[in-house]
Amino acid sequence: MSEITIKAMTTRRERRAFLTFPWKVYRDDPLWVPPLIPERMKLIDPAKGAFFHRGEAMCFAAFRGKEMVGTVCAAEDQFANQKRGRKDCVFGFIEFLPDYEVLRALISQVEEFARSRELDTLLGPFHLDYEDAYGLLVSGRDRPPALMCGHTPEYYLDYFERIGFQPARAANVAFAIDLQDSSEMQRLSKLANHLQKKGRIQIRTANWDDFQSEVDRVLILLNEALAWEDNGIPWHRDQLEAMVAPFQEIADPDLILFADVDGKTVGWFPGVPNLNEVFIEVNGLRYPWNYIQLLLKMRQTPKSLTVKSVLVLPEYQKKGVAVMLFDEMAKRARAKGYTWADLSITSEDNPDTVALSERMGAVEYKRWQVYQKPVPPEG
Image (cartoon, rainbow, N blue to C red; front, side, top):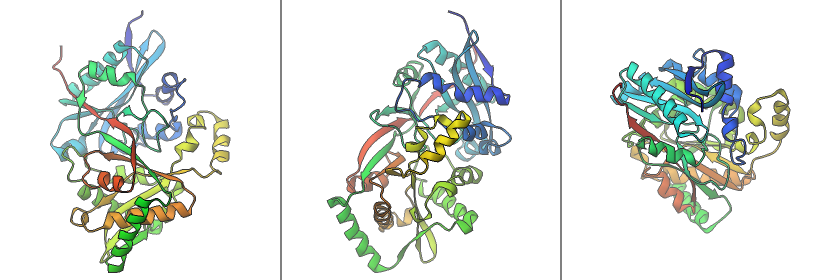
């Protein structure tokens, strides 16, 4: 068997080869949702990617002879490290064929990148967007992931533990919520109606005409509402705007909800169509005819709505804001024909979201884990 070599992927052609490698890993996996190559190309392009406003990154591929057998991206998020007082080397886009030596070669390259920048801990997998398909899938291999959620082969878990990675924080989970008019929904609605009569909490939809101000409000909510997370990664405004901007095209403004109290925004609850029901059919837009498939598939309404965040300022977390947001979202989603909602990218130790989801009759259906590993000294 030939030796494994590592190559930095720097040209546009190399970056495209880097991004299309996962088709080898998942060719026989019916649950995998291919990422949209045009969007990923922007993400890893130093001239266009939002990550490069706050840090630096390099993409690498592993080869046996001329065959690509694995990929990884190593990055230093200078903004997050400064805010957290840490020296983490973030890695992501890690994909590899079932060959432990390939993973060893890829991680060795990430460690070399880290040492050259005096970083002391590997943290990942994260793509260059912390909210997109991060972590390794631990459980939930009975259905495809929802929008922005990841999917990895089962052997990744064993290989990661074998090479010395340990869980970096609590697992992240996804809940499935039946939007039918169940007894749980009725109880929630009754409580929300009681709170509404008090008149202090006002639920409103997003104002896209004032997009920049809405982004500012969400940034405050993200950094204050998630302050309880010991290992939380602070948000950079450019990162948030890059994540939210595409949703202007696909989201229904009626389902992007804010909660205001006395004119102050205290909560955010965004629901968007689970377009992974569409993207699983369009091959990542690798070829021109895939765009035609996308246009045809976009005429169909997904069965599920996906909710990526339930944010409430700490001082309002016990005052019914989340209850009113959940109830209003459920009513609106049912009226639009959605049958179930995915609530994902939430930590299992979130003090409010998990408990409230369970009160609604939600069922955990997927779980992911982020890992860390000390960077060993050279040699």
